[in-house]
Length: 357
Image (cartoon, rainbow, N blue to C red):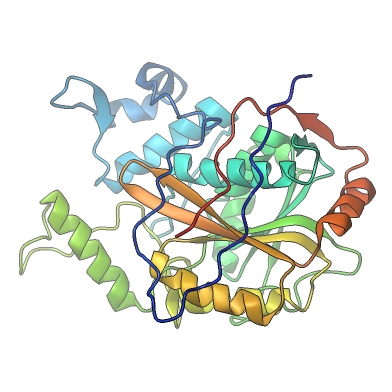
């Protein structure tokens, strides 16, 4: 079995006083193991999901695509991608719930795989021994669907929204291969992320989270309006219909008091109460200006290691923040204790674990 070396991640640099963190995004691209890295095969997509056919358009360059401003088209496209690449059947979400871009969610999973590889002699550990905690699994259940299909990992998906969990369970029921791989759990307390969540004896290799980005419903609509203006769609002019959210999203999915910054800081604070129950904590961070505040929060809880991993697809740039309370020696002990039965997948190509922002 051949192995490809994973670059050693670099620690988050200390914030420079009196110098604002640059909002310039990392120079990053779609992960090379992403099944959409070479583009979309519309012939294959429509073959596995005929419902997509009516949404396919031809661009000015003569290539097939869809109208990404059309929520129905986006949902049909996601259903096709999940069926073609991950063998998922019957994927559906209720109106008003987040319909996430599948390639971006897959990138997060692959970045987590590379992060775990740094603790496993530079190969990705696969199989049911690897347990992932998904904070805010949502009605779409996308991270467990992709993570299990790609790497055979087991997931605990958590959400405050019981209706979202019910829909996620419906998706799982239509895919029996996931019955033993994905568990769902309700977190009843709004302000709790990790507090009161884990049961006796439960440990996880990684936690993942796509936090609410916005501070209020008004902020959500303002961002949507700007996107609509850029697309020159109905709703862009004063007095026209309200702009639609092409990827949807309800209250708990898109906003919380304090927005992304407050949510991630709360997650960091609560992670310090369970420092040895999760080896790596991670979260997406969409707004680069929040990184300086997140770094300060990480220093306050005295993490052993923390990293910023750049992610990006086309014009969309993001990053994930990872932190751990375990040192290198402890991670090696964790690997031996928890991954005794895990298999290893050689890495053919990897992304950079770098990221000075």
